[in-house]
Length: 173
Image 1 (tube, rainbow, N blue to C red):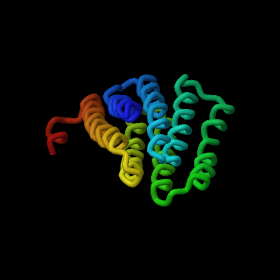
Image 2 (cartoon, helix red, strand yellow):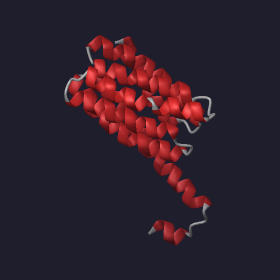
Image 3 (tube, one colour):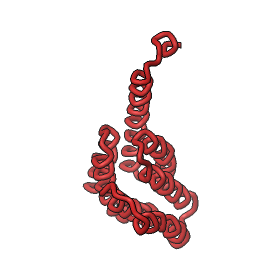
Image 4 (spheres, rainbow, N blue to C red):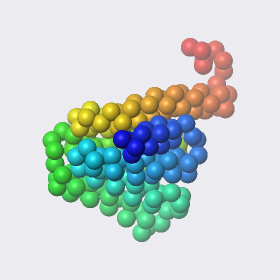
């Protein structure tokens, strides 16, 4: 239970921040918590995908990109396919693999707005996984994360519109 609660705290809180470094750090802590949580409830695919998610977060945390890092980072997707097959547990495995793939695309983005958009989609896949494996902690973390991300995306889009000097009448329409 402790790891599930920690996963909820880290997983729900990262969406409140705007700094990519903070977001990635909290995502890494969330993944580390959910690895153990999923293992304890027997959701091996979820634990495997969380392990790859942790690896992705650690790789991208520095903010530096080079050819070797790019190859290493994207090699987690073939690893995801292999681990999904090895830990196959029906639709739950498919949902966790899809959630990881969308998260990988999100983490790679340089724009925090695009990162959030990918994570909205990824959260939906993880909610399916967590529902199928019976993880109320995973569902809670992803539902809260989804809501916070949608709220923050709305604020970012409003800011963008205001800084672009959109006339008040056009913005109200």
